[in-house]
Structures are given as structure tokens and as C-alpha cells.
Image (tube, rainbow, N blue to C red; front, top):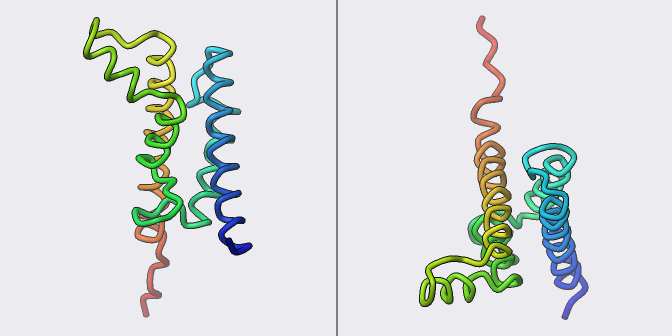
Length: 131
């Protein structure tokens, strides 16, 4: 594996690990991710991911909002928990539901930031000088 591939994977893993850590902090402290300092840290991670090109739809690694959801959901076994809940009682265990809610908060912010970031130039172009 080349050094640049390793660096890419290491950066993506560090971003994902820190996003996951912030979610755990929010869950432990029962604090919303949408408030600082968690929101600011998440935004910095988004800026890093975006700058590395990981938030584009065709990126590899995929750190779009959907990619984050897929990876974190897999780490936490949420798909299996959801499947089991549907097959049995229809209720998702509270610990999984809490993680899902926090992950949805991250996804929503990540999608909003992606949308705003992608449209920045459209709304901040300099007006041509009128002569």
C-alpha cells in the first residue's frame, strides 16, 4: 500500500473515530450535539473531511452524511438491532435508539454544511463593476 493511500485511510479513520467519540460524549453527558463545543468540533471535522474530498458523492473513503451513517451504524450494529426489533417486539432497544438519534443529528448537520459549502460561491460571487 502506498504512503498516500495509508495517509488517506488514516485521516478518514481519525475523522470517523473523533465523530464517534463526540457522539459518545454527547450521549454520556446528555448534551445535544447541536450546541458548542460539540458542534464546533464536528464542524471542524466536516471542514477537514471536505477539504480532503471525502464529502463528495463519489469519494473513497465516503464521508458523506450517508457514508458516516453507514459506517457508524455498522460499528454499532444498528442494522442488526433494527432488524431484530422489527422481527420481535417492534421496539428498538434504548441504547441503540439513543445512538440512532445522535447519529441522525450528526447526519443532519453534515448534510446542511455540505449543502451550504457547495453553494457558497453561488451566493458570494463578486458583482461586476458597473461602469
